[in-house]
Amino acid sequence: MDSLITAAAHALAAGDPLGALKRIALRDDAPTLALRGIAMAQLGDFLRAKALLRSAARAFGPKEAVARARCVVAEAEIALVSRDLGWPAKALDAARATLDAHGDRVNAAHARNLAARRLLLMGHVDEAEHALAGIDFVPLPPTLQAARELIAAGIAIRRLRTKTARAALARAGCAARDADIPALAAEVESASLVLNTPAARLIARGDERFLLLEDVEALLTSKVLVVDACRYAVRDASTMVSLARRPVLFALARALGEAWPGDVPRDALIKRAFRAKHTDESHRARLRVEIGRLRAALRKLASVSATKQGFALAPRHAAEIVVLARPVEEEHATVLAFLADGEGWSSSALALALGASQRTVQRALDALAAAGKVQSHGRGRARRWMTPPLPGFTTTLLLPGPLPGG
Image 1 (spheres, helix red, strand yellow):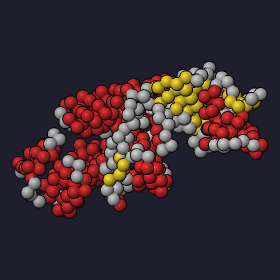
Image 2: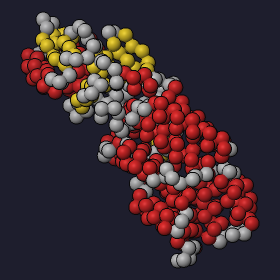
Image 3: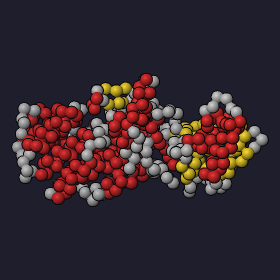
Image 4: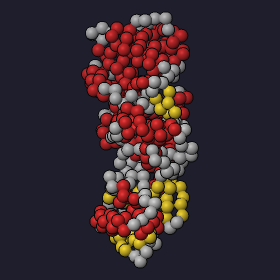
């Protein structure tokens, strides 16, 4: 490897893509094509970066398997940053295996980092943790160590383990300072804000207040019955009943939880659960059926009893009932939660991450765009959607993934 390529590689490792391009911009041999591709990626020109990396992979000879594998890993990173979650994960796995087989432990670890980040974005928290475990015994440079700790923090945050998350973010901050890359330090700082901004609202006895993630963690392990409007469930410290696929039952549970220790009149429950402007005997009959279903679903956690005016919820073992709600109520809040990371998402990537159809996601994006909450750029397959983060709030509880008891 000649001195210009070595100098360009060092510049890229230090986060200086322009310095790298000054050294190799006029060359078109395989190593410089790869380095130019990485430089263009750091500058945000992902289409040009992918084209250069693919050209480099073709230019490397059949005996240069490691170089080709590194190009694949670099392309996978570009796909992740540009939120192309449909990029073939098997190609990354094959590249990692090649790097491992040839003793390139650092780039193999980088490939594992990328695989774990992709899995975490899609809500596959257990699989992300398993992918990350393979990096534990590999000595990493500061940049990869910071990336690994950011993923570990993300996993801990999804599981509401705030102390573990804070420790991982502290290690990521130290690694970012050692790397001396401002963009990396800014990424760690941005991730740390999640732990210090409101994540949910607590509704109890007619009052509301905002909670941080660590407050939510404490709430879910306390002796209260929580009607969880972030995950559409009713839960205490040891048991969770999911009502995510039973929206009418959850609407009833939330109304009763907000009114505790009082009751809710029948007409109010009908309007809340069935969205009916006027009530008649058929609505009241349906309400009795749905209350019976709710009573059966929550039999281990609470009782639902009839009162003179309507119905009331009473905990069986907990001391009180509270409602945990999103910090901002929004019909398409989960879509906004993904877009709040500041990256450009395609509708197909959002559909993969949400586990929904692309048409459903597109309808949500169109509605949000009409309301001025999101904006798009590009056309066709290159179209991407973006929005600034919700001001003053973290969207962690809107993203897919397990919480305690889930």
